[in-house]
Image 1 (cartoon, rainbow, N blue to C red):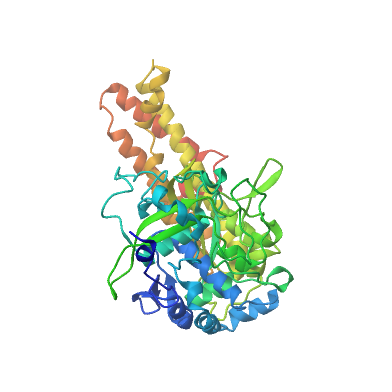
Image 2: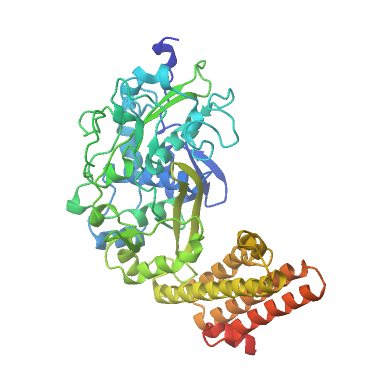
Length: 525
Protein backbone atom coordinates (compact mmCIF):
# COMPACT_ATOMS: atom_id res chain seq x y z
CA UNK A 1 0.00 0.00 0.00
CA UNK A 2 1.52 3.38 -0.94
CA UNK A 3 2.68 5.54 1.94
CA UNK A 4 0.34 8.33 0.84
CA UNK A 5 -2.61 6.03 1.48
CA UNK A 6 -1.26 4.45 4.67
CA UNK A 7 -0.72 7.80 6.38
CA UNK A 8 -3.52 9.81 4.78
CA UNK A 9 -5.50 10.24 8.02
CA UNK A 10 -5.11 13.19 10.37
CA UNK A 11 -6.02 13.41 14.04
CA UNK A 12 -5.57 16.41 16.32
CA UNK A 13 -5.85 15.93 20.13
CA UNK A 14 -6.54 19.64 20.54
CA UNK A 15 -10.02 19.08 19.10
CA UNK A 16 -10.53 15.30 19.18
CA UNK A 17 -11.91 13.64 22.36
CA UNK A 18 -8.87 12.08 24.00
CA UNK A 19 -8.98 12.90 27.74
CA UNK A 20 -11.45 10.85 29.83
CA UNK A 21 -12.67 12.95 32.75
CA UNK A 22 -15.40 13.08 35.38
CA UNK A 23 -17.31 16.34 35.82
CA UNK A 24 -18.06 17.81 39.24
CA UNK A 25 -21.63 16.54 38.72
CA UNK A 26 -20.31 12.99 38.26
CA UNK A 27 -20.77 12.76 34.49
CA UNK A 28 -18.12 10.77 32.58
CA UNK A 29 -16.88 12.69 29.53
CA UNK A 30 -14.30 12.37 26.74
CA UNK A 31 -12.89 15.81 26.00
CA UNK A 32 -10.30 17.36 23.73
CA UNK A 33 -7.28 19.15 25.15
CA UNK A 34 -8.82 22.55 24.44
CA UNK A 35 -12.04 21.57 26.21
CA UNK A 36 -10.18 20.27 29.25
CA UNK A 37 -8.53 23.64 29.84
CA UNK A 38 -11.67 25.64 29.09
CA UNK A 39 -13.72 23.64 31.58
CA UNK A 40 -10.99 22.63 34.03
CA UNK A 41 -12.74 24.24 37.02
CA UNK A 42 -15.90 22.24 36.24
CA UNK A 43 -14.15 18.88 35.95
CA UNK A 44 -13.51 16.70 38.98
CA UNK A 45 -10.71 14.40 37.86
CA UNK A 46 -8.97 12.68 34.99
CA UNK A 47 -10.35 9.13 34.83
CA UNK A 48 -8.13 6.71 32.94
CA UNK A 49 -8.06 2.95 32.59
CA UNK A 50 -4.83 2.64 34.59
CA UNK A 51 -2.95 4.79 37.13
CA UNK A 52 0.04 5.08 34.80
CA UNK A 53 -2.06 6.41 31.96
CA UNK A 54 -3.62 8.92 34.34
CA UNK A 55 -0.21 10.17 35.46
CA UNK A 56 1.00 10.37 31.85
CA UNK A 57 -1.98 12.55 30.94
CA UNK A 58 -1.41 14.83 33.93
CA UNK A 59 2.24 15.11 32.90
CA UNK A 60 1.17 16.16 29.40
CA UNK A 61 -1.34 18.71 30.70
CA UNK A 62 1.36 20.19 32.94
CA UNK A 63 3.73 20.40 29.96
CA UNK A 64 1.08 22.35 28.04
CA UNK A 65 0.70 24.75 30.97
CA UNK A 66 4.42 25.42 31.03
CA UNK A 67 4.66 25.69 27.24
CA UNK A 68 1.88 28.31 27.20
CA UNK A 69 3.55 30.23 30.06
CA UNK A 70 0.69 29.47 32.44
CA UNK A 71 2.84 28.94 35.52
CA UNK A 72 3.76 30.85 38.68
CA UNK A 73 7.05 32.73 38.87
CA UNK A 74 7.68 32.11 42.58
CA UNK A 75 6.51 30.01 45.51
CA UNK A 76 4.53 32.99 46.78
CA UNK A 77 2.79 33.42 43.44
CA UNK A 78 2.11 29.67 43.34
CA UNK A 79 0.31 29.97 46.69
CA UNK A 80 -1.75 32.83 45.27
CA UNK A 81 -2.58 30.81 42.15
CA UNK A 82 -3.96 28.00 44.31
CA UNK A 83 -5.77 30.11 46.90
CA UNK A 84 -7.27 32.47 44.32
CA UNK A 85 -8.09 29.62 41.90
CA UNK A 86 -6.31 31.19 38.93
CA UNK A 87 -8.06 30.28 35.65
CA UNK A 88 -6.17 28.21 33.05
CA UNK A 89 -8.07 29.34 29.95
CA UNK A 90 -4.91 30.91 28.53
CA UNK A 91 -3.66 27.35 27.86
CA UNK A 92 -6.73 26.71 25.72
CA UNK A 93 -6.15 29.96 23.84
CA UNK A 94 -2.51 29.03 23.25
CA UNK A 95 -3.50 25.62 21.89
CA UNK A 96 -5.99 27.16 19.47
CA UNK A 97 -3.30 29.49 18.12
CA UNK A 98 -0.90 26.63 17.35
CA UNK A 99 -0.31 25.37 13.83
CA UNK A 100 -2.47 22.39 12.90
CA UNK A 101 0.53 20.65 11.33
CA UNK A 102 2.32 20.63 14.69
CA UNK A 103 -0.54 18.72 16.35
CA UNK A 104 -1.31 16.06 13.75
CA UNK A 105 -0.73 12.59 15.19
CA UNK A 106 -0.18 11.23 11.67
CA UNK A 107 1.77 14.04 10.00
CA UNK A 108 4.15 12.62 7.41
CA UNK A 109 7.21 14.62 8.52
CA UNK A 110 6.50 15.72 12.10
CA UNK A 111 3.98 13.34 13.70
CA UNK A 112 3.02 14.49 17.18
CA UNK A 113 5.16 12.79 19.84
CA UNK A 114 6.79 10.47 17.30
CA UNK A 115 9.80 9.86 15.08
CA UNK A 116 9.03 9.88 11.36
CA UNK A 117 12.53 8.54 10.61
CA UNK A 118 11.25 5.11 11.64
CA UNK A 119 9.06 5.00 8.52
CA UNK A 120 11.92 3.57 6.46
CA UNK A 121 11.98 0.54 8.80
CA UNK A 122 8.21 0.31 9.27
CA UNK A 123 7.36 -2.38 6.71
CA UNK A 124 10.13 -4.62 7.98
CA UNK A 125 9.72 -4.24 11.76
CA UNK A 126 6.28 -2.75 12.45
CA UNK A 127 3.87 -4.82 14.54
CA UNK A 128 0.37 -4.69 15.92
CA UNK A 129 -0.51 -1.68 18.11
CA UNK A 130 -0.96 -3.76 21.25
CA UNK A 131 2.75 -3.39 21.94
CA UNK A 132 1.89 0.17 22.97
CA UNK A 133 -0.12 -0.98 25.98
CA UNK A 134 1.71 -2.12 29.11
CA UNK A 135 -1.13 -4.30 30.35
CA UNK A 136 -1.46 -6.25 27.10
CA UNK A 137 2.08 -7.05 26.10
CA UNK A 138 4.98 -8.28 28.18
CA UNK A 139 8.20 -8.15 26.17
CA UNK A 140 6.82 -6.24 23.14
CA UNK A 141 6.44 -9.56 21.34
CA UNK A 142 3.39 -11.33 22.73
CA UNK A 143 0.20 -10.73 24.71
CA UNK A 144 -0.04 -11.90 28.32
CA UNK A 145 -2.97 -14.07 27.14
CA UNK A 146 -0.76 -15.52 24.37
CA UNK A 147 -2.42 -13.65 21.51
CA UNK A 148 0.32 -12.57 19.17
CA UNK A 149 0.81 -8.91 18.28
CA UNK A 150 -0.57 -9.65 14.83
CA UNK A 151 -3.98 -10.51 16.28
CA UNK A 152 -6.51 -9.24 13.68
CA UNK A 153 -8.75 -7.47 16.20
CA UNK A 154 -6.02 -5.39 17.81
CA UNK A 155 -6.74 -2.04 16.11
CA UNK A 156 -6.76 0.84 18.60
CA UNK A 157 -8.83 4.03 18.39
CA UNK A 158 -6.54 7.00 17.84
CA UNK A 159 -7.37 8.46 21.28
CA UNK A 160 -6.42 5.18 23.01
CA UNK A 161 -3.19 4.96 21.01
CA UNK A 162 -2.37 8.58 21.86
CA UNK A 163 -2.77 7.98 25.61
CA UNK A 164 -0.82 4.71 25.39
CA UNK A 165 1.99 6.53 23.58
CA UNK A 166 2.15 9.14 26.35
CA UNK A 167 2.31 6.33 28.93
CA UNK A 168 5.17 4.68 27.04
CA UNK A 169 7.07 7.98 26.92
CA UNK A 170 6.84 8.32 30.69
CA UNK A 171 7.04 4.72 31.95
CA UNK A 172 8.71 2.76 29.14
CA UNK A 173 10.89 -0.12 30.35
CA UNK A 174 14.48 -0.75 29.38
CA UNK A 175 15.34 -3.77 27.25
CA UNK A 176 15.41 -4.78 23.62
CA UNK A 177 13.03 -3.43 21.00
CA UNK A 178 11.64 -5.42 18.09
CA UNK A 179 13.27 -3.12 15.55
CA UNK A 180 16.45 -4.24 13.81
CA UNK A 181 19.65 -2.26 14.31
CA UNK A 182 20.32 -2.19 10.57
CA UNK A 183 19.90 1.17 8.89
CA UNK A 184 19.25 3.59 11.75
CA UNK A 185 22.02 2.34 13.99
CA UNK A 186 22.51 -0.60 16.38
CA UNK A 187 21.74 1.45 19.49
CA UNK A 188 18.17 1.90 18.29
CA UNK A 189 17.35 -1.61 19.49
CA UNK A 190 18.12 -0.72 23.13
CA UNK A 191 15.07 0.74 24.82
CA UNK A 192 15.74 3.53 27.29
CA UNK A 193 13.98 3.43 30.66
CA UNK A 194 11.25 6.03 31.09
CA UNK A 195 11.70 8.98 33.43
CA UNK A 196 9.21 7.70 36.02
CA UNK A 197 9.99 4.00 35.65
CA UNK A 198 11.52 2.85 38.91
CA UNK A 199 10.21 5.52 41.28
CA UNK A 200 7.00 6.70 42.89
CA UNK A 201 5.39 9.73 41.27
CA UNK A 202 3.26 11.89 43.57
CA UNK A 203 0.48 14.01 42.06
CA UNK A 204 -1.45 16.34 44.36
CA UNK A 205 -5.13 15.99 43.50
CA UNK A 206 -7.43 18.90 44.26
CA UNK A 207 -11.19 19.07 44.05
CA UNK A 208 -11.13 19.87 40.32
CA UNK A 209 -8.80 19.25 37.39
CA UNK A 210 -7.86 22.93 37.53
CA UNK A 211 -6.96 22.58 41.22
CA UNK A 212 -4.84 19.54 40.44
CA UNK A 213 -2.90 21.34 37.71
CA UNK A 214 -2.38 24.47 39.81
CA UNK A 215 -1.15 22.39 42.76
CA UNK A 216 1.39 20.54 40.61
CA UNK A 217 2.71 23.53 38.68
CA UNK A 218 5.84 25.16 40.08
CA UNK A 219 8.16 28.09 39.39
CA UNK A 220 10.85 26.97 36.91
CA UNK A 221 14.49 27.37 37.82
CA UNK A 222 15.69 30.57 36.16
CA UNK A 223 12.14 31.42 35.17
CA UNK A 224 12.40 29.55 31.85
CA UNK A 225 9.88 26.87 30.90
CA UNK A 226 12.03 25.39 28.13
CA UNK A 227 10.80 23.92 24.86
CA UNK A 228 7.80 21.65 24.34
CA UNK A 229 8.59 18.35 22.60
CA UNK A 230 6.30 18.36 19.60
CA UNK A 231 8.00 15.71 17.48
CA UNK A 232 11.27 13.79 17.35
CA UNK A 233 12.18 15.32 13.99
CA UNK A 234 11.80 18.98 14.95
CA UNK A 235 15.39 20.07 14.43
CA UNK A 236 15.30 22.94 16.93
CA UNK A 237 15.33 20.37 19.75
CA UNK A 238 18.37 18.20 20.48
CA UNK A 239 17.58 14.54 19.87
CA UNK A 240 19.29 11.26 20.48
CA UNK A 241 21.32 9.82 17.61
CA UNK A 242 21.49 6.06 17.24
CA UNK A 243 25.02 5.33 16.04
CA UNK A 244 26.31 5.34 19.62
CA UNK A 245 24.87 5.71 23.08
CA UNK A 246 25.17 9.39 24.04
CA UNK A 247 25.17 10.84 27.53
CA UNK A 248 21.84 12.02 28.84
CA UNK A 249 20.92 15.56 27.87
CA UNK A 250 19.91 18.16 30.50
CA UNK A 251 16.37 19.41 30.25
CA UNK A 252 15.73 22.96 29.06
CA UNK A 253 12.92 23.43 31.58
CA UNK A 254 9.69 21.87 32.87
CA UNK A 255 7.89 22.03 29.49
CA UNK A 256 10.69 19.86 28.13
CA UNK A 257 10.75 17.60 31.21
CA UNK A 258 7.04 16.82 31.24
CA UNK A 259 6.74 16.32 27.46
CA UNK A 260 9.98 14.49 26.74
CA UNK A 261 9.89 11.64 24.23
CA UNK A 262 10.90 8.57 26.18
CA UNK A 263 10.23 6.35 23.18
CA UNK A 264 11.16 6.64 19.52
CA UNK A 265 7.76 5.52 18.23
CA UNK A 266 5.69 5.70 15.07
CA UNK A 267 1.96 5.00 14.69
CA UNK A 268 0.22 4.14 11.42
CA UNK A 269 -3.47 4.94 10.86
CA UNK A 270 -5.64 2.24 9.37
CA UNK A 271 -7.28 3.10 6.03
CA UNK A 272 -10.65 4.72 6.67
CA UNK A 273 -13.30 6.50 4.66
CA UNK A 274 -13.86 10.23 5.13
CA UNK A 275 -15.71 10.93 8.38
CA UNK A 276 -15.08 7.48 9.91
CA UNK A 277 -13.25 7.09 13.26
CA UNK A 278 -9.48 6.87 12.97
CA UNK A 279 -7.76 3.71 14.21
CA UNK A 280 -4.10 2.72 14.57
CA UNK A 281 -3.27 -0.64 13.03
CA UNK A 282 0.56 -0.78 13.11
CA UNK A 283 3.25 0.51 15.49
CA UNK A 284 7.03 0.59 15.60
CA UNK A 285 8.86 1.26 18.87
CA UNK A 286 12.57 1.96 19.27
CA UNK A 287 14.89 3.57 21.80
CA UNK A 288 14.01 6.87 23.39
CA UNK A 289 15.59 10.01 24.75
CA UNK A 290 18.12 9.95 27.56
CA UNK A 291 17.83 12.70 30.15
CA UNK A 292 20.37 13.85 32.71
CA UNK A 293 18.00 14.72 35.54
CA UNK A 294 18.96 17.42 37.99
CA UNK A 295 17.68 16.43 41.48
CA UNK A 296 17.21 20.07 42.43
CA UNK A 297 15.26 20.95 39.30
CA UNK A 298 13.73 17.80 37.80
CA UNK A 299 12.54 15.84 40.84
CA UNK A 300 10.09 18.32 42.35
CA UNK A 301 7.73 15.65 43.73
CA UNK A 302 10.26 12.94 44.64
CA UNK A 303 9.96 11.29 48.07
CA UNK A 304 13.38 10.79 49.67
CA UNK A 305 14.10 7.06 49.93
CA UNK A 306 16.95 4.93 51.19
CA UNK A 307 20.62 5.38 50.36
CA UNK A 308 21.76 3.29 47.40
CA UNK A 309 25.37 3.28 46.16
CA UNK A 310 26.09 6.47 48.07
CA UNK A 311 23.06 8.33 46.69
CA UNK A 312 19.61 8.84 48.14
CA UNK A 313 17.22 7.23 45.69
CA UNK A 314 13.61 8.47 45.44
CA UNK A 315 11.06 6.08 46.93
CA UNK A 316 10.47 3.23 44.51
CA UNK A 317 7.59 0.73 44.11
CA UNK A 318 7.89 -2.64 45.83
CA UNK A 319 6.44 -5.92 44.50
CA UNK A 320 6.00 -7.23 48.07
CA UNK A 321 4.91 -4.15 50.01
CA UNK A 322 1.67 -2.32 49.25
CA UNK A 323 2.05 1.41 48.75
CA UNK A 324 -0.25 2.33 51.66
CA UNK A 325 2.33 0.80 53.99
CA UNK A 326 4.73 3.57 52.87
CA UNK A 327 2.28 6.41 53.55
CA UNK A 328 4.44 7.66 56.41
CA UNK A 329 7.20 8.41 53.88
CA UNK A 330 4.87 10.84 52.06
CA UNK A 331 3.73 12.53 55.25
CA UNK A 332 7.27 12.73 56.59
CA UNK A 333 8.32 14.52 53.39
CA UNK A 334 5.30 16.81 53.74
CA UNK A 335 6.34 17.82 57.25
CA UNK A 336 10.12 18.03 56.84
CA UNK A 337 10.95 19.06 53.29
CA UNK A 338 11.55 22.78 52.80
CA UNK A 339 11.80 22.82 48.99
CA UNK A 340 9.96 21.26 46.09
CA UNK A 341 6.35 20.14 46.09
CA UNK A 342 6.22 19.14 49.74
CA UNK A 343 7.97 22.28 50.91
CA UNK A 344 5.36 24.42 49.14
CA UNK A 345 2.43 22.37 50.44
CA UNK A 346 3.46 22.85 54.07
CA UNK A 347 2.59 26.53 54.11
CA UNK A 348 -0.34 26.52 51.72
CA UNK A 349 -3.68 27.93 52.88
CA UNK A 350 -6.53 26.39 50.91
CA UNK A 351 -9.57 28.58 50.25
CA UNK A 352 -11.85 25.65 51.14
CA UNK A 353 -9.94 23.99 54.01
CA UNK A 354 -11.98 23.22 57.10
CA UNK A 355 -14.37 20.60 55.72
CA UNK A 356 -11.89 17.74 55.71
CA UNK A 357 -8.96 16.99 53.47
CA UNK A 358 -8.51 19.76 50.88
CA UNK A 359 -6.32 17.58 48.68
CA UNK A 360 -5.10 14.03 48.14
CA UNK A 361 -1.54 12.80 47.58
CA UNK A 362 -1.91 10.37 44.69
CA UNK A 363 1.16 8.11 44.57
CA UNK A 364 1.74 5.86 41.53
CA UNK A 365 4.46 3.41 40.59
CA UNK A 366 5.08 0.69 38.00
CA UNK A 367 6.23 -2.71 39.24
CA UNK A 368 8.19 -4.64 36.64
CA UNK A 369 10.03 -7.92 36.43
CA UNK A 370 13.13 -6.82 34.54
CA UNK A 371 11.79 -5.84 31.09
CA UNK A 372 8.21 -7.03 31.67
CA UNK A 373 5.60 -4.82 33.32
CA UNK A 374 3.91 -6.68 36.19
CA UNK A 375 1.35 -4.29 37.68
CA UNK A 376 0.64 -0.73 38.72
CA UNK A 377 0.67 0.25 42.37
CA UNK A 378 -1.07 3.34 43.69
CA UNK A 379 -2.37 4.99 46.83
CA UNK A 380 -4.62 7.97 47.58
CA UNK A 381 -3.63 9.67 50.84
CA UNK A 382 -5.61 12.59 52.30
CA UNK A 383 -3.62 15.67 53.16
CA UNK A 384 -4.34 18.91 54.98
CA UNK A 385 -1.43 21.26 55.77
CA UNK A 386 -2.97 22.09 59.16
CA UNK A 387 -2.87 18.39 60.08
CA UNK A 388 0.54 17.61 58.61
CA UNK A 389 2.28 16.48 61.79
CA UNK A 390 -0.79 14.57 62.99
CA UNK A 391 -0.98 12.69 59.67
CA UNK A 392 2.72 11.92 59.91
CA UNK A 393 2.29 10.51 63.43
CA UNK A 394 -0.87 8.54 62.59
CA UNK A 395 0.62 6.96 59.45
CA UNK A 396 3.91 6.05 61.12
CA UNK A 397 2.35 4.57 64.25
CA UNK A 398 -0.43 2.93 62.24
CA UNK A 399 2.14 1.25 60.02
CA UNK A 400 4.10 0.05 63.06
CA UNK A 401 0.97 -1.48 64.58
CA UNK A 402 0.13 -3.33 61.37
CA UNK A 403 3.70 -4.60 61.02
CA UNK A 404 3.68 -5.86 64.61
CA UNK A 405 0.36 -7.71 64.20
CA UNK A 406 1.63 -9.30 60.98
CA UNK A 407 4.79 -10.52 62.72
CA UNK A 408 2.64 -11.93 65.53
CA UNK A 409 0.62 -13.88 62.96
CA UNK A 410 3.82 -15.26 61.49
CA UNK A 411 5.06 -16.34 64.92
CA UNK A 412 1.70 -17.97 65.66
CA UNK A 413 1.92 -19.87 62.38
CA UNK A 414 5.39 -21.09 63.33
CA UNK A 415 4.12 -22.29 66.72
CA UNK A 416 1.36 -24.31 65.06
CA UNK A 417 3.72 -25.70 62.44
CA UNK A 418 6.20 -26.96 65.05
CA UNK A 419 3.44 -29.09 66.59
CA UNK A 420 1.75 -30.24 63.38
CA UNK A 421 5.01 -31.19 61.63
CA UNK A 422 7.54 -32.40 64.24
CA UNK A 423 9.89 -33.97 61.64
CA UNK A 424 9.52 -31.87 58.48
CA UNK A 425 11.63 -31.96 55.34
CA UNK A 426 13.37 -28.59 54.85
CA UNK A 427 11.99 -28.34 51.32
CA UNK A 428 8.41 -28.68 52.61
CA UNK A 429 8.61 -26.03 55.31
CA UNK A 430 7.39 -23.08 53.23
CA UNK A 431 4.27 -24.87 51.98
CA UNK A 432 3.51 -26.31 55.41
CA UNK A 433 3.89 -22.96 57.16
CA UNK A 434 1.58 -21.35 54.59
CA UNK A 435 -1.31 -23.48 55.89
CA UNK A 436 -1.19 -21.62 59.21
CA UNK A 437 -0.01 -18.17 58.09
CA UNK A 438 -2.90 -15.67 58.08
CA UNK A 439 -0.86 -12.75 56.78
CA UNK A 440 -2.18 -13.33 53.25
CA UNK A 441 -5.67 -12.36 54.47
CA UNK A 442 -4.52 -9.80 57.00
CA UNK A 443 -2.61 -7.36 54.80
CA UNK A 444 -5.40 -6.62 52.29
CA UNK A 445 -7.92 -6.30 55.13
CA UNK A 446 -5.69 -3.89 57.08
CA UNK A 447 -5.77 -1.26 54.33
CA UNK A 448 -9.37 -0.19 55.01
CA UNK A 449 -8.89 0.60 58.73
CA UNK A 450 -5.60 2.37 57.94
CA UNK A 451 -7.21 4.64 55.34
CA UNK A 452 -10.09 5.41 57.70
CA UNK A 453 -7.51 6.40 60.33
CA UNK A 454 -5.93 8.83 57.87
CA UNK A 455 -9.29 10.27 56.79
CA UNK A 456 -10.33 10.90 60.40
CA UNK A 457 -6.96 12.47 61.19
CA UNK A 458 -7.15 14.77 58.14
CA UNK A 459 -10.54 15.95 59.41
CA UNK A 460 -9.00 16.92 62.74
CA UNK A 461 -9.69 13.73 64.68
CA UNK A 462 -7.73 12.83 67.82
CA UNK A 463 -4.73 10.73 66.77
CA UNK A 464 -4.39 8.72 70.00
CA UNK A 465 -8.06 7.81 70.08
CA UNK A 466 -8.06 6.94 66.41
CA UNK A 467 -5.02 4.70 66.83
CA UNK A 468 -6.66 2.80 69.70
CA UNK A 469 -9.75 2.10 67.60
CA UNK A 470 -7.56 1.17 64.64
CA UNK A 471 -5.43 -1.21 66.74
CA UNK A 472 -8.54 -2.89 68.10
CA UNK A 473 -9.93 -3.42 64.61
CA UNK A 474 -6.66 -4.85 63.31
CA UNK A 475 -6.34 -7.18 66.28
CA UNK A 476 -9.90 -8.46 65.89
CA UNK A 477 -9.31 -9.08 62.18
CA UNK A 478 -6.05 -10.92 62.87
CA UNK A 479 -7.67 -13.14 65.50
CA UNK A 480 -10.46 -14.05 63.10
CA UNK A 481 -8.07 -14.84 60.24
CA UNK A 482 -5.88 -16.94 62.51
CA UNK A 483 -8.91 -18.80 63.85
CA UNK A 484 -10.11 -19.56 60.33
CA UNK A 485 -6.70 -20.95 59.43
CA UNK A 486 -6.61 -23.15 62.53
CA UNK A 487 -10.19 -24.33 62.05
CA UNK A 488 -9.14 -25.92 58.79
CA UNK A 489 -6.74 -28.28 60.57
CA UNK A 490 -7.59 -31.81 61.69
CA UNK A 491 -9.52 -31.90 64.97
CA UNK A 492 -7.35 -34.61 66.56
CA UNK A 493 -5.05 -34.24 69.57
CA UNK A 494 -2.19 -32.90 67.48
CA UNK A 495 -4.48 -30.43 65.72
CA UNK A 496 -5.94 -29.16 68.98
CA UNK A 497 -2.47 -28.74 70.47
CA UNK A 498 -1.28 -26.85 67.38
CA UNK A 499 -4.28 -24.55 67.69
CA UNK A 500 -3.65 -23.89 71.38
CA UNK A 501 0.04 -23.15 70.85
CA UNK A 502 -0.69 -20.73 67.99
CA UNK A 503 -3.34 -18.82 69.92
CA UNK A 504 -1.16 -18.66 73.04
CA UNK A 505 1.75 -17.33 70.98
CA UNK A 506 -0.42 -14.65 69.39
CA UNK A 507 -1.96 -13.52 72.69
CA UNK A 508 1.46 -13.43 74.35
CA UNK A 509 2.76 -11.17 71.58
CA UNK A 510 -0.21 -8.85 72.02
CA UNK A 511 0.60 -8.52 75.74
CA UNK A 512 4.36 -8.26 75.34
CA UNK A 513 6.05 -5.08 76.53
CA UNK A 514 7.50 -4.66 73.03
CA UNK A 515 4.02 -4.46 71.51
CA UNK A 516 2.72 -1.01 70.52
CA UNK A 517 0.92 0.57 73.46
CA UNK A 518 -2.37 0.72 71.54
CA UNK A 519 -2.45 -3.09 71.22
CA UNK A 520 -1.73 -3.61 74.90
CA UNK A 521 -4.41 -1.07 75.86
CA UNK A 522 -6.92 -2.78 73.60
CA UNK A 523 -6.21 -6.12 75.29
CA UNK A 524 -6.83 -4.62 78.72
CA UNK A 525 -10.18 -3.07 77.79
